[in-house]
Length: 202
Figure 1 (cartoon, helix red, strand yellow):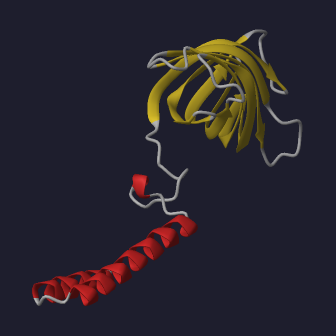
Figure 2 (cartoon, rainbow, N blue to C red; figure 1 turned 45 degrees about the vertical axis):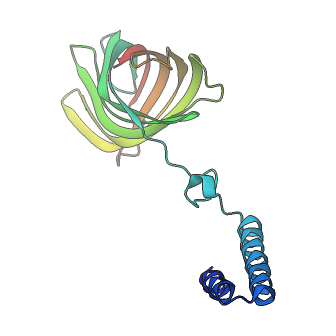
């Protein structure tokens, strides 16, 4: 491109000196250089409409929601007095059309003998993105269980499936079923938690 600019200046000089043949020759060279440059840009795949950045790599700003929810639950492999209740809260980020990230704390208790609690990070995948979107999710973190006076700590793993309602709105409703287990060092039956719950994202 710099060479093309030099030729433009030279052609202007020759034109003012009254040499039209040399001027026409130089302008022809400029056209050739500019066409070669355009061809090079096309072959290399440069997208000048996006500031020269490759197409498909534009960054999407994530939308953050505060999440809160609850529902009935069942505690397994720990002493429990019948029906338990699950409560959760945290943050959710809508990062793409087909996916979201989450950071949640949750607790399940029967308000008598046992409690199971944990903090985890995970993701939801939306195979059919729409205003009412089915999803599958997973998470991993750390969990704590207290039952019959004994304390257990360990890695936690969770899997969920459900529906996200009003996903195109800035206030959404989450309905899901989830299984949650804590893997501790005891090697015995791991404390587990099964639940169905509703949550609001706002």
